[in-house]
Image (cartoon, rainbow, N blue to C red):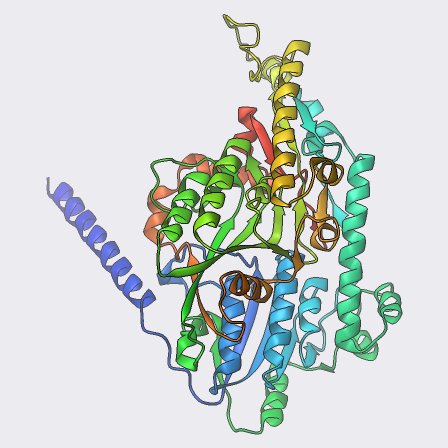
Length: 572
């Protein structure tokens, strides 16, 4: 009995202690904006992913909010106007952002430099991604023993057919659009001619963009840069000799040279994660009009219809629609920018989003800003007739529909598992994982896929003010980069957040010279949201995505129609 009471009291104390820690941590998280000392330098350390939407933070273990694309964008503009900030030190390392986001970052740094304040970049074992951003800086520093992994670009796609054959698993796929090869990773062991055509065009355009910006940043000709890259990767002395970096220095030496450059005494360092709490209004950047920046990021699914908050695992139509309705009903919001970073997903969820986006468009002036990826369902939801701005490196288009279902009969046989069934209805087993598709079932699916494809192309044609026959040739499930999509009429302008702001101000009749206040939706999520809402199914799906290249696995297993980008390209 005594042991029981001790255990009970200990458990109660631990519960209250945990609640207390969370309470004070959350209070700390809501602390007032930091006081930025005079003679400060903004330190922008960029690591891993750079999301569009603010991730869940655990205040006990973090020093402040994680950086997002809009955080960096606004932070650099605030710093440019802040008399306390004298310079920026850029320290990218191990970046995993896509090339469109890198274009935004590079443009933000170039914009900051127009303030007359210097930007120094310090690199540690940089790849092409980190180096690409650093070429926007005034000076590039590299550690004396750090190699520069600038060696060109390579795109790889993983295929699982031979593995599935060994397991006795087959995957049946039907698609509309000759480039809509979303299921090829399960049914082939190499690229189809159509896939190779698209991937070649993507790599060529991205590589050309990389060379152009390196040449501009390092004051070389494109031909010189191409020749140099063919000699890479580089040891630190080789990179310096080639003029790819300015100095080989340890980090403290770089800070010493920055101090000499500024000639203003001791420098105070302020981390970007801390500085993002500084209100733009505090440095005179307040605007009379409020513009909503709505972030739609992740795979498109239906989600929980009873949810009242934004789901943390992707772009769910149930919660995102509520967010759009909230903004539509807010009279203080003058205009809207919808920021999309999605490869698509379920057909019905995409249609839900498309409808709600169109309803919002009728109530507020709106512009679509595309990030790394706004393809298939991510492109479909943007078909409101409003202007679309994309980066040259945005993957977009992929106007097509795909169906797939696994047949696990062979795997069950190997495991000694069998299924028996009673069926009424000729096509009752159309989504069974134990039977192949019959000819009639395949024909039935083709009818649905073709009808959905017709609807997709029609909506694009209407929104882009084109004829069906003008859009269909550039549809076919093909992925286009933004630089390729613009001349084909699939996007309106090339640019990032600054361009989107200019466009939405014009649409809302806000004077071009007038500042606006940007309000980001959805708001940052709390740790309690994460603990209470994330289910075991969500976590399993997340793990499977890591293996199968980001696929919404639960949607694939259901055997439903998908508006999904045909593959996920990683260009390194």
